[in-house]
Amino acid sequence: MKKLVIIGAGGHGRVIADIARLNGYTDIVFLDDADIPCVSGKVCDYVNYKDSSSFIVAIGNNGIRERIQNLLLDDKCEIATLVHPNAVIGSDVEIGVGSVVMAGVVINAGAKIKNGVIINTCSSVDHDCVIEDYVHVSIGARLAGTVHVQERTMIGASATVINNISICSDCIIGAGAVVVKDITECGTYVGVPAGRIK
Image (cartoon, rainbow, N blue to C red; front, side):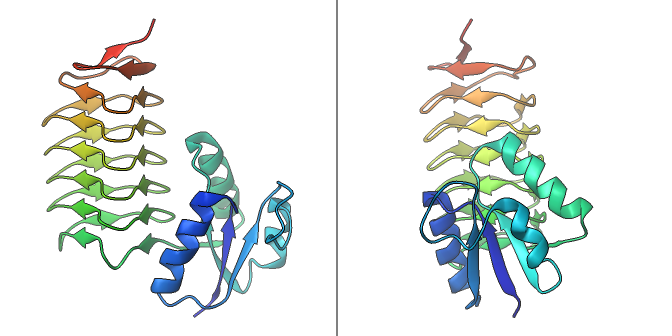
């Protein structure tokens, strides 16, 4: 198995490293622009690894994760996809490159998880949902059937989205919010039912 280069050495990166080890990676290095002791270099040093390694971007900020993953893709780097062995994944679920599915997650039949998505610990994505590129479904969030979440949106911890809902790109759904109608305007939505912060 190739070396895995994890870009991002914070807490999220350490969780991803644990998932990578459970998937058989034994040679893992971190790159990060922050001054963190465990890193092997800056993000720009990815070029030193590109011919012999797979990459995953372990940065929670959706826009930054998108920018770095697109940089790697443009430079023809191999991007890994990681699924924790304790996740429950339907047989016909599609999961795109650079996505991470964490422990305790359930993703049911017909769901499509696109590129660079984080499906975080103990969250659930029910049947026929579509999760577009660089979305983050936070810890304990629940998406009922046939939900469509567009690019770079974050679904907060323990938020709930009822079935047949569409959420536009670049939104933040606050922790514990309950989304009961389509969201068509980007912004931050909180409460029960979720409403936009003006």
